[in-house]
Amino acid sequence: MVQYDKLVRDRIPEIIKEAGKAPITRTVKDPAELKLRLIDKLAEETQEYRESGSIEEIADILEVLQALVEQVHGLSWEQVREIQGRKWEERGGFRDGIVLERVEG
Image (cartoon, rainbow, N blue to C red; front, side):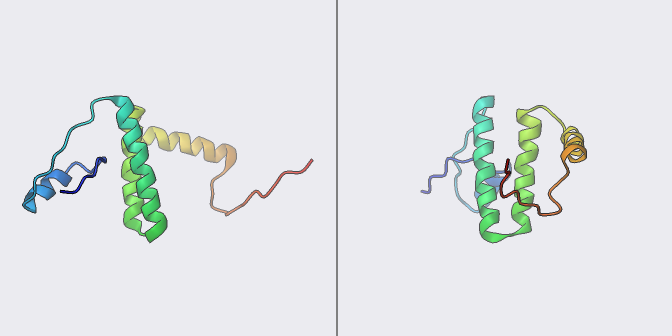
């Protein structure tokens, strides 16, 4: 037996069953718990990307972000893209690789 206690993609229990094993699962009902579990998942996927540099991990990060947007904040991905666009207009993006080292005076 391996203990996980972590949020997984929706089809993972089915995949485990197909492999001849018995997943023990529960569904998160509490919105506060779901938010915390998604934040933990985001940290996990971000760490995996740091270690691997894999585009697959970026896809996982986007999936977690989409769940946070839709399930926790009740917004659509399009609404977040609009917010992103406004912030880009006001402050720019991260395309130029600028590092702020300090502000004097």
